[in-house]
Every structure is written in structure tokens, then in C-alpha cells.
Length: 319
Image 1: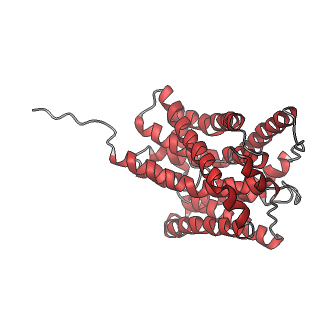
Image 2 (image 1 turned 135 degrees about the vertical axis):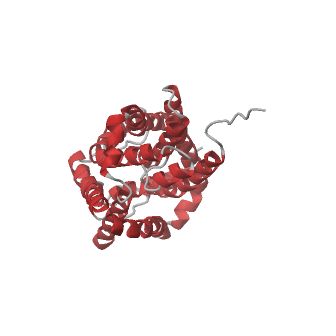
């Protein structure tokens, strides 16, 4: 079924040093904007009511990568597509999750707390998850026979440094900015949020323009894979929260936080030659992350709109 995806496994997407620098700076600005919605007192929610946050964290960084690996084992896409799915699942939540949680009548405080915690801990968890599940996939693929897939030679330390620079530092600065200069933060927050969506669309366009013919051959399969992957992410978050009998508001927020991934970070990591060597064929990884970034906005808006129209509790009127 996925034979036509093989063309993507041999596409190389090399960015110049100038383009890579721009990419890193732009993502850092986006993450700075995300942190402008976070206040220090949001972290008090973790201490006061740790249960929903812990369950959401487990859903984000443990359940989603594991389910992604199982999905890869079942549908068996080509290697670069499979590794792209694993990398996206290893990233923290996306920058519009708080807005979507609010639109869905979810627990906004929980959403913001999860975003802050996930973004900061992604410095450690993103390299760990991709190295662990990615290496497991490569070993499984090679034992299965056929064309040999070279072992992953990703240095977790280098990925940690990169994630810390483009995620950790901007988020810490944004936190300080929002808490000590709140008026200025309020003015620049919305423009930065708009910039983040526009920038991602431009980045996807630049990525596709030189390899458009190869991508059109398999875009319908990529659509199906991302649709299924994203649905599992949203469903696993909601399902785990339901198993632990959390409130509906919490279930909605955990579902959105798990299903909205920072695929911009995934793309930035791919194009860093210190993490993925220049000769590494990234076509499948890149197109998965690129379409994820577009589709999760669409699916998130649909889910949030439906939930937003549905009351959390039925109102019983006395006659």
C-alpha cells in the first residue's frame, strides 16, 4: 500500500547555513511568544492539583510515542516516514493548544500548565524519546530483512543542546518577560501568534518547492497516515483521561495537548546538520512533519468547535 512513499526516502532537503539560522531564530521567537501566555502562578496548579497534569504529561511523553511505535509496526510505512512519525510524537505540544483548549471549553489553566511543563521538559524528553523509539524501529526494520537501514547515529547531547537553545532559553525569557513586563507582553503576544502560523506555512512551502513532484506522488498516503496518527493522538489523550475519570474539562484539554504537536520543532531538528548528517535522506520525515503542522490546526479547530458547542453538564430544569 505504501510503496509509492519510497520516492520520499531518497529526497534530501538541505538548508543553507543562513536558512538554518533563520529557521532557528524564527522558532525561538515563536516559543518566546508561547511563553507570553504563561505566568509563574500557573505552576502552582501542579502542586495544588497534580493528578490531571501528571496524567496529561504521561499521555504526551509516554503514551503517544508508544502508540506511534505500535502504529508504525502495524501499517509499516517506509523508513523515513516512520522516523518522521516518531520524531513528531517525541515533540512537546504545539503553540496553539492553549487557544484551542479555551475554544473547546476545556481547562485553560491545565492547558497552560501542561504547555509550560512539556515545553521545558522537552529539552530532555524529546531527545530521549526519539533516540529510544527510533533506535528500536531501526533495529526491528533491519532484523526483518530486506534493504539494510543504517543505525541511527543521533547524538542525544547535541539534540539536547539544540532543543535547549531554541526552546528552553526563549521560554524562560518569555516567562520572565510576561511576569515582570505584563503590559508589553500583552501587546506583542497576538502578533507573535499570527507570525507563528504564517511562518510555518512559509517553511512548508520552501521545503516543498524544490521537490514538489516527488511529494505529489504520495501526498494522498501522507494525508491518510497523518489523519490516523493525529486521531490516535487526540483519542489516546482523551481515553487516558477518561480511564482515570477526570472531569470533562480536563479530558478535553489533555486530548488537545496530546494531539497538537510542535512539528515546527521537528522540522528545525531535521535541518540541523549537527543532528542529522547532510547525506541523511529526510524527505519522508519532512513531509510528515510539514503536513502534521497543517492538519493538526484543522483537526484541532474542528474538535474544539464541536466541544465548544456542547455543554459540559446537562442543565435540568424543574417544572
